[in-house]
Image (tube, rainbow, N blue to C red; front, side, top):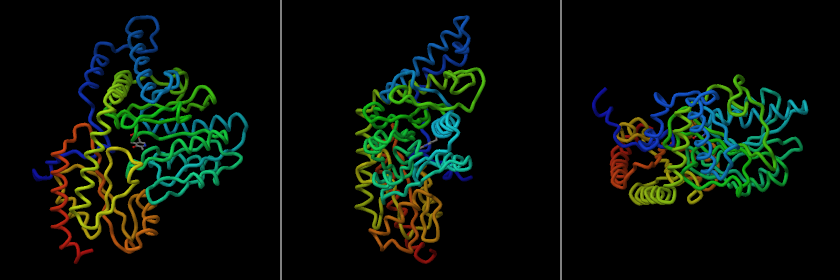
Length: 402
Ligand SMILES: *Cc1c(COP(=O)(O)O)cnc(C)c1O
């Protein structure tokens, strides 16, 4: 591999994952070799200290979203949390009544939610997949129309991991409350970046992941409301009864400490980091729209997570663009007239076509940039320059080859 290919020096893929913050790592380190006890060991101080650390982290996670500590269960990440939320609630309800139930979700969920929904269907439950507007958001009227007598849960992505749009949480929760339906949010992309209050917004279940908010990989949490209503789920990992029987297996103490610290840190920095990242994002979008012809931005113009820029460019060969942009780590996808490799882009493209019929039969290359805590204005300007030069170079070649 040439040196150039190895030189991915600017990281703008913070939706995929984030680095562990040094402050977070520092808090984790003692829990590997020194305070290594099992939190379930109730007979000695090694166990007590580990348990104390786990309970401190539980409170830190709870605080970030306005929950109570006892409403937080640790898991291996958002994928597992979403399994426990959806499959767990349906298993519990079916066990109690021997009936099948109905889930309402959307077509632009993270892959893990979509796969869980498919599993529910395999188990004989019903699922409605709502379409979205051109920004990738669900409509409240569609939601109301989809409700059935046996609807148990509504589950949506909070901020979309590809295009950044935020779903109308308050309106969704009002509908759910009035129909006594459980409301689960996949908040992996928004936790730590925007303020969340599960009490004010009346959220019943919420999934999050440490590695999306500057904590370690392989650890996450699920919030489940304990009063009005008390959310009940059936576990599917059995054993020593850890996490109040909801998720057996010795707790990942260093990971849990890291998640807790990451939550506390992002809460402390939210008031400065959110506007800082938003300004970088707005600067990037302004420069791109002024300097690159025919750039189409995906996602909602204002109801969007602070760190996401998703843009689609026509008449550029993807491979050529990737080569010209090889110094930047970002994520790409295509939404071509011939077929899309992203289910999210495919859904919004249908709606974009209604407003912009000139998009028809054209191939688009989509770039997703995810700004992070370490991103600087100089980096953003550099990436804008690079992008502009790449498009200028690639477009003339592409015209003959697309
Ligand atoms: C990353 C992500 C997940 C999966 O989280 P893991 O902790 O990696 O399992 C789920 N949903 C969204 C929106 C995500 O961004």
